[in-house]
Length: 340
Ligand code: GLY
Image (cartoon, rainbow, N blue to C red; front, side, top):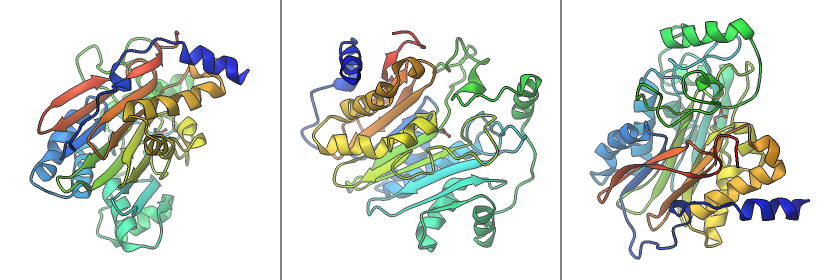
């Protein structure tokens, strides 16, 4: 059965971008790659540091903070709440020395990515959650923000309450905003659409870092934690090999230690795009029929500044910025919105 699935997936025709065989001969750096079309603005913010010989760690934190300041469905305090009407946020950060920090299910703190960095720098721990994460933030100078929903989140929550249907599927928050069951890269009005913001970067000095920030799955169970704050799931950086981050249904990413898997595939010699594809196939092969109903996307960057992405479903895009280019690029995928 497993072999048949492998053959089925291998025989799917996939466009060329993520399996690009021509690789950089000299490192392209600095470079930053982020999830979704919003990543373009995130990259521009981070570039103020990265483009001035700054540290990749400072750049990815700054990009994530910019995203947390925006009011949108899926990142920061303006995002959609859990099913109890409470916004809780997940974030992680990792540097070139494998130092890492994360917070999960943190409430009423505007910049979880900066709290994650403090966890990394000030504590012997990697992950602090819930009330403890909030207390840690307050002790370290972060302000307690009001427990209110943004207007769009309030509207979305009221709409969700009408059915109160709890389904653990990603992009449920965008279902009615776009076309079809999965979120498109742009909404009908041209607004960039995304869920998790994941960022990986390499500085001019060749050192790599990454950060992720999200409110997680919309209308999730209170206390639910996704892949984003879990090192090796939503974010992984190995300064000898490369870095990867993910977006989509966190539970599926956690099951395969997704970004660690992507980096290990790169270590074996696969290109970033092919490494992402192989990690997606690992997820889809568990149950190809079920996989038609959810989205996971990976992006990866290697030490030479090669980058790539791959997703379960059509619609995942990444944003890249270097001295040579600034682009939003659609990732290749297995299913066209649930159809092979
Ligand atoms: N990838 C974000 C989440 O599942 O929470």
